[in-house]
Length: 354
Image (tube, rainbow, N blue to C red; front, side):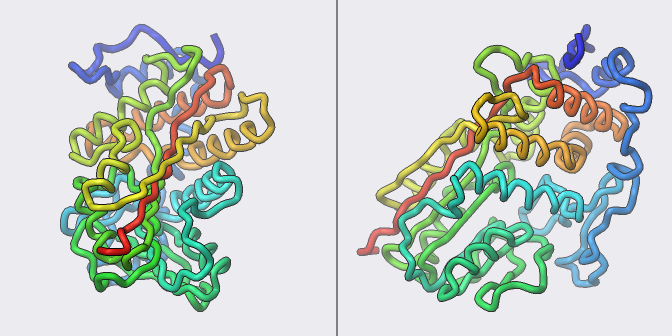
């Protein structure tokens, strides 16, 4: 049936429920036109998509290439799964729009007021959140940090970016920020409590930490995401990759944000859970719009999302990644799977007496 990719599976990887890369090559031969399995092979995995910043000679700008895509070079304990070239960076900005839609136009949920003086955005990515916040709060100094220097040069005068690995000791002084914003570090952190303890140290007494993260699981309430479908297997790939890296992708499922904030000493912790559709299947116009942008975010660079975990961590070939991505795109476009994922925002306050 069109839109479905199930077939007699190659024997699954023991105990994980993950179908091996060869399975998707077999399925592709049955259900995809010949050109689809190789579509975008040059642009997705074989071309030089290196960001212009990759030519800088400093060691902190030295990127590694995996199947034609650029990734942050491993420094310290950092092992980041996302590509950092232009194609992947465009998806980060699309995801910023998705989050903005989910939050109904808000950039934050913590009750920080309008008089914040110093703000830190950890894992700033392209810097789009820091720039938006700086525009909204011209009286605040906003600093964005990331392991890759992929941010623009032209920014508001109150915004600046620094290269910093948030999994190491932070270079900022204690009690120096009014608000710290952390978003989408899923699969990047070994010790979330240590991360939030650094945030606690750097916050002024009474300051707020806010963490936004998402589940990697594509779920459905009506059984339309089958376990052996590409969408169902997507979820298992991330869970297993996180287990192998000791950097979990189950931050939302295991309530890691709240538990780690509590362990770090935060009080007045609040949270909000969002159900985010994937695709244009919802009847509600607002949810349909969100789902369409989520699908765009994913489809725009599935290969960039998948290459590190599938090739480096799970051992898939470039061709296996391509055909899996093609099958996943096919399922999402069919609108037969009423898929969604969970996104969670958690915020807490450093006690005024700290």
